[in-house]
Length: 304
Image (tube, rainbow, N blue to C red; front, side, top):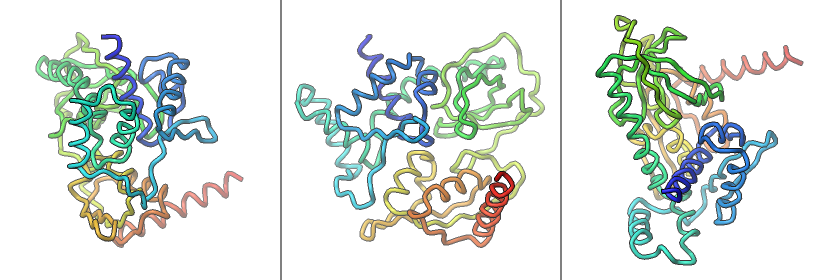
């Protein structure tokens, strides 16, 4: 059982480092409930078996993504077959670690890292469903916010999971708003003795592919052409966008067209990968990008 826990933590670390933003060892240690020394040891282990671990100028870690010309990129069928062979007959193979690296980093699906994490998350789902049935408030402990890059406890009244169980819609007491919380970013769940007190404010609407509900009834159409690297990063960070991407295997391009309820995440994504993305539209989204960049420029001038 101890070894299983270690494997699960390594898989969790792989998943964390594959997703933006890069994270400090302190953040990782808090999210995985490990000492920083153990985090460093796991990072060294991943480096030894072939993962390209990157450390930025702020001493934050991430797994480097591959360039768009890489030919070692596994298809869904290839990755699934390799996974099955590996689990059934290659447990003692000397090259197993190298194959694992390719599966986790270079396949069209995240394979078992996320699936194992999801299996672990089934306990969280069961606890939250219990709280919903009993109409009890819940504390999401050690919740990691990608927007603020902070870890904190959130007191909520859970409402409903999205269809794919990746997001939880809940009323947050502190902000007095209905929000979506990523299941993967929840450390643990504590069911309190307090009953729902804000049922009249509960509202659920299926979120867009970036996890935002249509609260102000204003949708924005986005039309992007991605290269392979941008495609891989996008689908790993926001897997719900996958049905909206049209793949052109011959030209190695990926066409994303969808409507979003909040432009913030897709704006951040585009500006972070300007050399990898061509913005085709809409006119409204292009104008939003121009305004956003202009405001950043003015703010930087004022801060100098």
